Image (cartoon, rainbow, N blue to C red):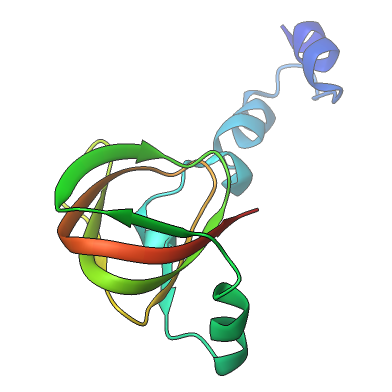
Length: 125
């Protein structure tokens, strides 16, 4: 098994080292799926607002839908009220509205619940 590991991952582990194998696969923060707790919501600086105004605008009416981020998204909420929860839903949510600068991490799977029609400037990295 260790030979297969080294062949596929380019790293060797000491023979019989199940602890090292576990650490490689399960203790790596870079392999964890992001959750709504990884969404950043804050008030933007004046300079950030000016930069955001150059981004495209997206609008959506009152609705609920699932979304998966395949890139990091930054946005400035102009109008509306949104609550986002994890997918699958575990009860954890985050809400934001007008004037909020929001950053969604790549890999996030979530449910958007748009309570008031939303309008935002957005940019993907």
